[in-house]
Image (cartoon, rainbow, N blue to C red; front, side, top):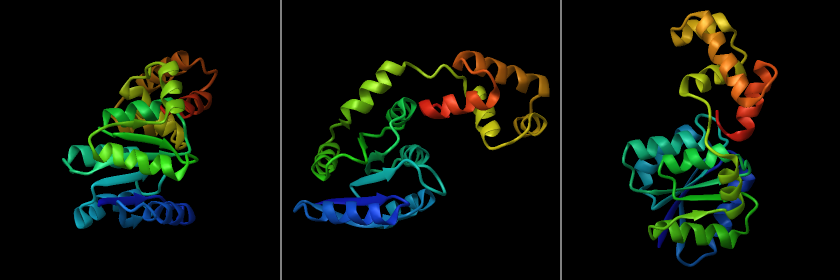
Length: 201
């Protein structure tokens, strides 16, 4: 029996996925959570074989949770379930040791097959998401540029960004300018949108 933890903030979707997986004779959903920041405790408590994580959750997004599970040496394999086919997400997921990456609109049989495959030590990548990621190329932004764009996306002004990151305002402007150039964006908000659309921040 393969023990599964489900993490998705949409209660109806989580319930439907749990019910569909529960119909499989070799799969058992042992825990369900609705927030990313509940996953690590649930993993410690229930010791699942596979954690199926939605990307977009309150508390912590699925990719951040996957990175934390990887850092803490959790034994469960991770499968990301997403409606967001952003190329940067797949690359970040692979870097975090994620073994499965599947679209939310995939048939239940595909998710069950993904769970079985990654539990057996293999990988399961949605072909369309993988092709999009390969076509998009590598993330051109540096970590500092990503940090600055994330803060701009939250509505933080340059002086506060400078104070938060312990930089001068001129350096913050330079990072913004560089990011805008790399993304072909006419202003900082367009740069944030472009980076978000690619899954790079």
